[in-house]
Image (cartoon, rainbow, N blue to C red; front, side):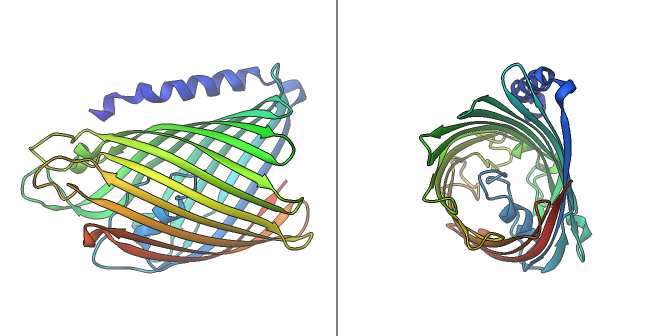
Length: 335
């Protein structure tokens, strides 16, 4: 079972520990970033999954699509502590971040996201990033369980452990190439334990600076997920999948203080179940997401943001389609 496969994350934990131990406390500098957003969403069930579509987040987080669609205001305060130092390899940045998500009218969706990260410079043009992310006991929504054979409605929850390694390489003066690799586990509550999934992700992301103020980017990720329920005819519930994710972005400085950030993301998820009677059999989902954010730098330490995001998923299983619109206002302060 997936609950016994936690050694898949030891690789990332060991590398994190090694890089942290190499940094020199004698020359360390400490800083912190605190921030918060207030976001309106017209579908609370899709908020967290839609928000994490970005390459830097978790673009394969599972979601439940119920008949009832609820809107809400979500507050997401965060605090990140950063230690910058010089190691035997080069500049080192160690950071720990806690991010909360508080729903005004639907507190059952409240959850937190914890992240530990090391970015190690190897040369002026090369850096390696290693990250571990932990999202415990996230509520997805009510769903039909398969384990009892009576299809009872139970709360579906998932805990995610994700390791990430990224190599950043500057090419000449305008190009930056990032090679991304992820691996992790999704562990569900007992009613949905056959969905426990091991997954891995690989792909490149490249950006090009047209000028000091305008940068464009393109990226592609391939992901494969293997669920415990694969081939198990007792439950007919195999959420194993292949996934292709593509993104295109544009960052533009409009003035010295104001900048615009645009992102389009497309995701194709093909479920690989071969179980007759499984609703995932021959199913695929197509997701389109567009996002725009204005950032206003008040000072070197403070920034305000205004953003809008639209997500639309179409599925060969019509009950799994959804649309989600988010509008947010927020800010951050570094000290």
